[in-house]
Image (cartoon, rainbow, N blue to C red; front, side):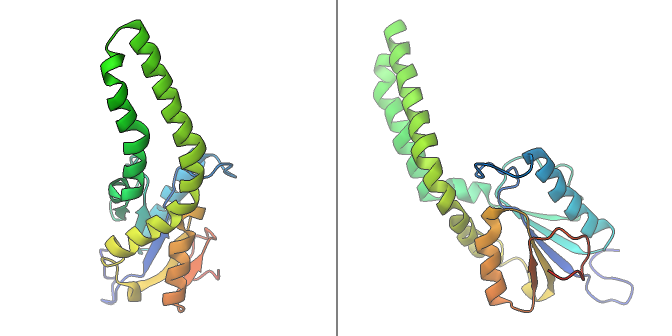
Length: 198
């Protein structure tokens, strides 16, 4: 069938926002991450197969997306997010610099192994207890900004009929798109229909 239907008209386009598909930043997810991932894959494949829609999936998930239909356009933000100064700075200050400072001592056998172990536990503590709670609030806005700059240029928003928001991390981008394009249906409901009301 391709991008055109029998009458030569463009097939409808669906934009699925699943920035945190495995729910890694959600402290208490309502659903198992593996089930949520399967929901995303099932929904995108449904729209591509059954509805004949062109589907764009925007995600920051670095994992495999092998189960996706080959017609689904996958827009990945994970590499752009990793290059952003904020995560890079955290990795540098919390992991790399302490590792460099401890490196001469770490090679000294048993006392060095103890120092390396303390450094490793300290780095994990700072990452999990200080950085992740802070980043949990910043990440949705950071990903929305990356998506606006890198992905939305490739998508013709006039062709989009429905935007489906799959997780909390995707809400800031969806809210911005809803304000810019009030004629679009932007929803968190996972209805398998192009005409269902939000």
